[in-house]
Image (tube, rainbow, N blue to C red; front, side, top):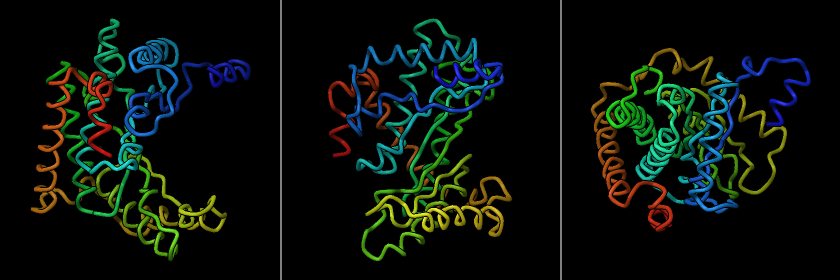
Length: 273
């Protein structure tokens, strides 16, 4: 609201604004605990933003559905994938339940994942996420627009993997995790700084984190092709396995009544602790 108010004050048409807000309450109950209201009333805040932005700020990405916090709280790659998409299902269903057409808002959904140390597993996780979400939107919700089934995501390297001991090694960890995110098809990327395990990042550490992205983007060639590991027996096998494991979790959450009920019962919280 403040962003829109400032835009109007400066004479900017809100229909021209673009950006992203997190607007993801369910991961707070699962992973962080920084919430004010119970889950069900909180969902109205989210669907109201979907509706308002669809009518007045159409270029705005109305939510960033986060698996990052879930992974950092102790989830496995499969759990991060499953619980994030299950939360996504809950948001889509809530919007449909208040009368929104899926194709009017689904294209503005975005996701936020972690990238940890197991390079091939992380690449496979991102690939499985796209495949699962496309199927969910088409088969469960009947989405017709191609954009509605696209899983657009931001990635942050794994803060919990960094160590205070021998912090220079964190540069290597971050580079490896960033590489996995790029190979997995991330649309945007945040690389953590080497000293974040024990301090607010220094200017030098932040610069190295930025240069890590730039070397990968402009000198390595990894961003020059789409899905460069497609066809690899290992990566395809890992992708299939992660998809199957995540699907089992989603089906279990469905059997409990969906993500909201599962969270109220403490299911995902127990699984990652």
